[in-house]
Length: 588
Image (cartoon, rainbow, N blue to C red; front, side, top):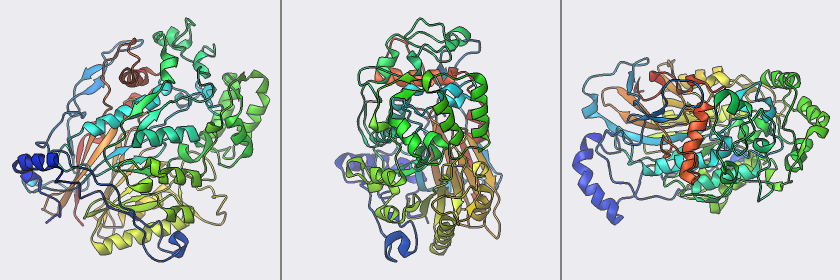
């Protein structure tokens, strides 16, 4: 019998739990657990003993009458009528739940037998963007839509609205379990900049945020540059977005975009996983370059580039041909006289891995916990950014670092981390735990085996090898990741007696459809487990008014602009089987 309460008792317990929660007698017992050491050796902790950090518990919300749909895409999804030009969003039809039996056929009657093991929320690819950062390569927009998006100036408002949505959820929608935590699976920042890291940590833990760098009074980015390549919301300029895609004029947009916001912070414990945009300048260049660091904080910014030069630089980046940024630096040097003067700002400096860890461990950033949000002093001592943590009595989480310090936006892991992971999985098997693995990269985007300059003799391992390792271990239920900005759920058949696992990739929160995902784990008590995935949007309304430049109005506009962004891909929402699902697998 699971050590968490049965869902069939949810309705019967509702009144009692509501009373206890109101009087403070009920606290969240699952999910307040501890961070496990990042290694089994003295190199990780200085000793052979485990280090633990307890999170701050919170009062459990009143249990809902499960199942529920309110606040999820099971109720409604932002959509727009057909047509051309700038299209306005509204309430659209819900996405139904799909039962997937790729790994195991479901058995009838499981709804009545089911007990909840754990429930949590995944954020991924928030991309909180300093849109005025000198190292941004917006001028590559004609080569790739990801170089610049018309909604990017509102990324912080969008992230805060996502926090508000999670805070309003009344437990897990299928099992009625309390939500144990939120995990961010990387690319929390966009430019590996201190300012962006500060905005991310404040959005998650609570506080005031002014998403502005440089001149504290004026915006100094591409959207008032006079270059027609970009949408100029405040100007009469007939830029390409207004001319070709009927983008609106929104007076006061830029001033509102860099004005102070307030985040309530999550009311759940939250954990952090690192992505390539968190670790690498531009998300693709090897860190530690003094020229790029100085350029980031300096007073020059390139805003336009001939198409031929842009194609050459992007083709090189896309193919991994410039991991150290040599060609990128040469381009910047050659374009000095074409750059715009901007206000220098030290907060745009790139943060190092040690600074990333220190920022997470700052007591001012604890919020509802845990201290460090998964990272511990053992990570600082060992120079690692991977860890394990207890999700519930039955389930353990493992957060990996799949970024490659050698450069390029695809990932891999080093031999030391792989060996640590093997030990973790073996220990979980001995303990009878289930395991959920978190990373930024997907199995298909871990093909970069470039050497880590800090460990030049260490072998790097890719996604195919990692996927096979997880498939061979009975405890693994899911591999949860992002990076691709697309909803995609892939079954991985087990080997050697394992029941297999599900790879759950979730869309970003910068590109439409701007989603996060609730994941619930339930024991069906018939030899199978079910993983329920439910997608959620931010709290911002689907409909927006161009004159509403409040924090809520900006978050709604963030979504609508992302829907209309030229070059955006309609396929990012995935198929029905990649969205709201029940994923069945054999219990090991």
